Image 1 (cartoon, one colour):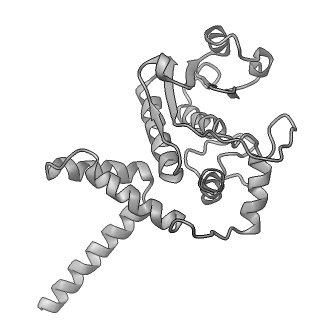
Image 2 (tube, one colour):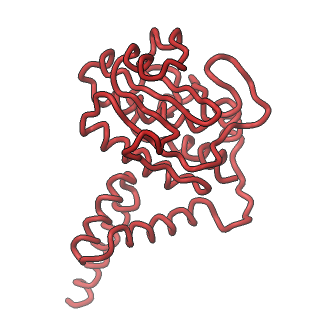
Length: 244
């Protein structure tokens, strides 16, 4: 009887562990924070330890050469070495300093929570730099506006206004800053679409500037989609850009 009980307990523990590992990163973060609160541990202690362990398992040990599939290499060239306007680049663009994000406009709670999840997901993937949301505009180098195209243009006259005409989301990279917006008017009450656009524009502003028709489940899919998570291929090319 004792052996049967132990077997059941072991099976249940294994199911819980597998469920945790397979869950979205945002869910993992909430669970780990709950454990910190339950056991009165220092905020972020378990979370940081898990992130380090996960990062090491994903990226391999320092100096280890990672072999990528031809599919990943081809997708990297399409998304990173080209842009939406038909330009091709010999070397990829990537930020070499931390990304500090200031948000303004119409900012419903679900969009701010989504932004936190996106930042968490990107920080899990990217090693050399860190992304964070800041409360003061003068601290930021990434500026996100939630509202209308006209409101975005008014806030940032440097933006190329003609590119906003049919856009539900948009980003522009400048030498020291990036400017992004999600059109909350055109998307009306479609919260999932707004969240998807935010994830796409923020990720593209990191140097993954092109769209593609190849993979409907990719965050960089050219057609309309409501993807709110990175595909495995998305994650791989993000890591290829920043971690290698």
